[in-house]
Image (cartoon, rainbow, N blue to C red; front, side, top):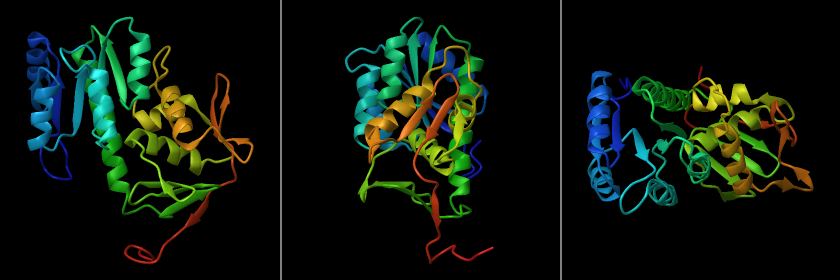
Length: 254
């Protein structure tokens, strides 16, 4: 239950298999979610036009516009609704591509509905923590080199120009920037950013790091921005963050 607005979290299941849609609708409803279903991208569009959705469970293989195209289109329109991509077992390349174009996590078919619920709760819990901490966050702005992060508005500037990041990318960058100059393990990043424990051969956080590098640039001033510490984790290699508190609402309050 979403305590902020006293309503169940709204989940959209997008899958062309009616049996899967019905199974997940019934199971997630029993778990306390408000569930809507769509068989393709067109039906999803109709739902998104009339509803405020908390998370989308999106099958990769769909008739017409496939899941990858839908995800790419939503992110290009600056829609940051969390997306869990469903992929057939063995489609590792497609899973990675899904993360690269903006999906937050993925789950391979066949899967246990309990695992899907766990993934959904982890992402929504992470999102609620982010929203709940906005008013309490001090400092309000972090600046490291050419990157400036405004925590309250979730705005990121690169040399003064705004950068469009997904919720997961923003969370990841914030952790790395706050720890600039210090190693952060992959396990800690997965737990903090994705809100779950790592599993074998889990490459999700690595793909999110790769997306950050593409959006921010791999190097700045001849220095690698985000260093990979092989088999351990990542390090934002620029100078330590400079916290700044702006005057205005919230400043100086206890």
